[in-house]
Length: 255
Image 1 (tube, rainbow, N blue to C red):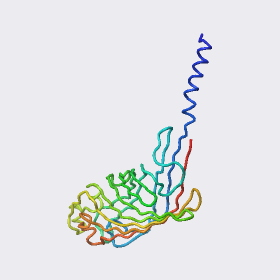
Image 2: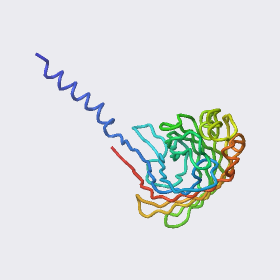
Image 3: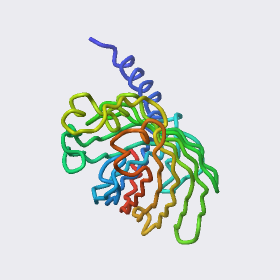
Image 4: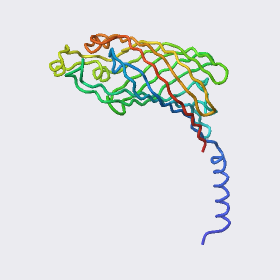
């Protein structure tokens, strides 16, 4: 039979070790945005369409003594350095009208992570995403923002952007295979990896409550390099204007 004294002592020791662990706060802070985007129908298109828009923003994670980012609450462009979530939805491109004969390119969902350093009045960031659904390629963005923090939760930002992708991404959206060339009449074209657009974005966020806010942005990109030289873009437009508006919900989970 077990010694009751030893059992009691062991239980007390485990409790003493476990209590600090249980007392340590664990928190996860993030934001989800859903809305609509007005943008070119595909990369290089000269006509526009409205499509769904979604964004994921990782704010912070704390687990005991380890902490990444900020879990203090829903602060837009919260000052500090660390990880951030990266998400992009690319609508499908159909092989019809001016692209008749080109293969259909299915919708893509890109997921990834980024690094940022944010001060009170400026920010720099770099994101890397992978096509978890769709193109199965790597793409990303680097940029900077000037930030204005106004009264009543208003935050304005503006700054340059550079989009890049690997060869698979470039070939998916800017390349023309031999078979597509025969069917569409476009010249065959092989697109390589690199920066495919440079642009500038202006945006605003207005808090509606502690957990909700509305966000919007205007952006102008100019396709460059192999993207600009692609026959798909040559018959369309290098300058790409886009606008987004959405509703943001902040989550600050503690467990």
